[in-house]
Structures are given as structure tokens and as C-alpha cells.
Image 1 (cartoon, rainbow, N blue to C red):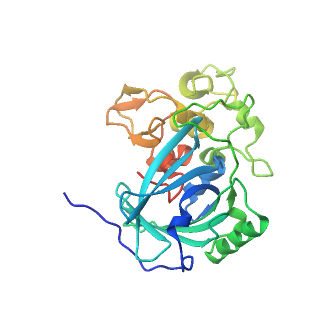
Image 2 (cartoon, rainbow, N blue to C red; image 1 turned 90 degrees about the horizontal axis):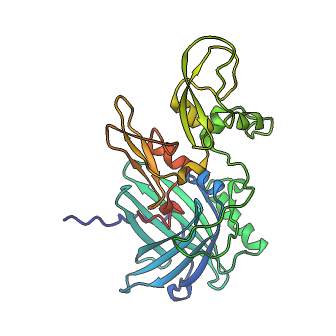
Length: 332
């Protein structure tokens, strides 16, 4: 068995002077984040919830463990990550074998009892690298001056401070516990659907187009027998109907893919995986909410609801992954 170890790169930014690991241990909250990875930022904007972090010394002097808890898709999750120390105090590293990526974490500023600012540098063998800047707090908020310093560092890393996601407190949670959804949740806005649906002058999805996805199928007054798809908002699936060929409504699509990308919301990420035998269909992916990952279906099988994506990147764009709550938390 060949064990892959992180490839240490030369630090690109100085860490906290005289960094003290013992003082850095304990409870933190991730309260703000920004990244050069577009998919990561899309997920953070859709789910800007504070993640609770518990840092503890590991079994050996060469590592420590981080336990993260937070909310995603109506469920409280918990993950554990082991980090290796380096010869540079304040710099930690770990390897993501599944993604063939090395991640360096640098504690660049901290006063230990109030806040910490970290930079995460992820390097993939494919060359798809990214940088994230994160703000940790011992409480659920930070002083304005600390936030200003954080944004200054963000700008120094070549990112706009306007893109910083300030996270919200949703309270403590018990891992595995279902969280009650709000009685009148805001209408989700999905990036793929934004590109396909019409937008109003402010860049938001037109309410009329959102409503069209809830409309019943309408054959129209003509007498054709065209096979079309409509979005069944109750079942959260795209289904066939016969279209007459004229008029009707906007819940009318030539293929299932267009129907799904136009109408589904993040709610489909909580739907079960329902494999069904099929032929002549392209490879698909589905989001397994029990493990928080996008998984491929075997050839010859299709998904029986709208938890169905035509690429891994499309699945992650909608549903993300539990272990992707941040570069430092990314443990799969």
C-alpha cells in the first residue's frame, strides 16, 4: 500500500509570529469567508450559516483534530478532520486523496481569545488551484475593526471585499438531527436556473417564471400530439405530457434536462435516490444526503425524481457537499 503524504510548498505568506498552538485550541466559529473558487462561493451564498469548530490536540504531537458541526439541507452534520503540523508554527497541512489535492492552512493573524484569520491554499494535480480566506471568532460575531482587517487581507490576496460572505447564526445543533424548516421559507435561487430563466432588472428571477414551474401542464388549443416535459412541483420531477403545438404555458420543455435545470430548486437535494432501469440515457449523478456527496449512477440506471444531474459539477453547484463546508473542513 502506498501512502500519499502532502507535498509541502513554500509558504506564500508569513504566519502569526510566535504562534502558540495550545492557545489556538478550543472552540471557534467560522463567521466569514471568501474564496477564488466560484462553486464554493455559490454554495456559501446559498447557505451562509456559521460553522462551529472544536480544535483538540491529537494522539501525537504532530497533529490535531478539528470537529465541525453545522446545518445543511435541513440536517445537522458533524465531520472530523486530522491535520498535520509542519515545521512552520501556524501552518498546517492535509491531503485530499479523493480529489488529489493538497491543502495548506496558514494562521496569519490571531489574538487567541477573540479572533483568528486563516488563509487556505489548495493545490490539485490537475492544476485547478484555489485560495480561501476565513475569519474565526470565539463568539458569534467580531468587532468592526477586526472585520475591516479581514477585508484588507482579502484585498491583498486579489479578491474583492464585496464578495465576502458574512455568516449567520442558526444556533447549536445535534448531529443527525433534522431541523424544522421555516413555515414560509424564501424562494431559493439557483445559479443554473438563473442562467436559463428570465431575470428582472435587478438580476433576480422573474416571479412569473418561478410561478410557471408550478403550473399544471397545458396542451393548448391546437390538435398536435407533441411529446413535452412539464415540472411537477409537488412530486419534484419532470414528467411527460402531450402538447397541442400552440399557446399553453411556460411549464413546457422539449427535454427533461431543460425542464430540470429551469425549474428545480435546492429542495431536490433532500430527495431520496430512486434508481430505475433505463436505456439510451446519458450518465447521471445524484446527491446522497445521508453522506453529503454527489455520486454517479451505474450505466443502465436513471434517477426517478429531480435529484438528477448530468455532471458532478452540476450536482455540486446545486447541492454542494457536506465535507466542502470549507477548505479546512474538507475531509473527504
